[in-house]
Length: 158
Image (cartoon, rainbow, N blue to C red; front, side):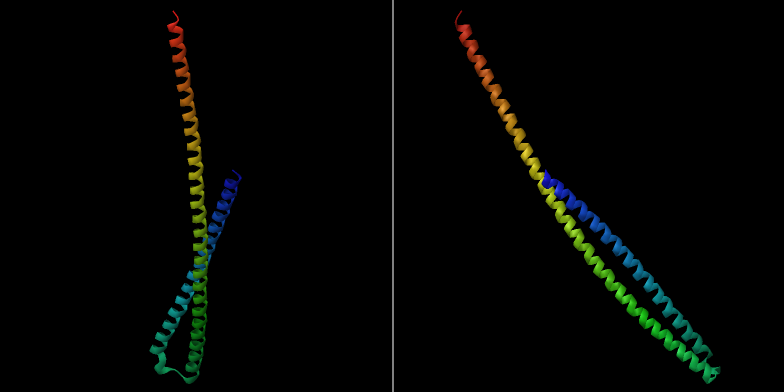
């Protein structure tokens, strides 16, 4: 029975690890989604600025053009940085998802081991019950036989 308690403890710990890994995956996935939303916003803003600039470009002085190009360079740099961040966040999601898969595989193997042990215990219990039933049937058979033998000896004496 101590082996079952150890297995129950291992199952409980594996379940806790799986749940913790699932929470980590959900957390890093949310961070990745938020990063992706921010990247989309930056790209959308850059496109809006480019579209507005294209409409106004004909009547701009060189100083404004220089500021615009500097701003767009900074915005493009920010988009590049955010793209790198989003890529790293995606890799983090992949790593944590793999960790989750590993913990789920460990949990499943422990569950299968538990099922096998329970099945083995049930088979041992069934064999014990069958043995007791066979012993009871044999004892009843002996008693009936003894009673039948005693009745024939008793009945024959009269």
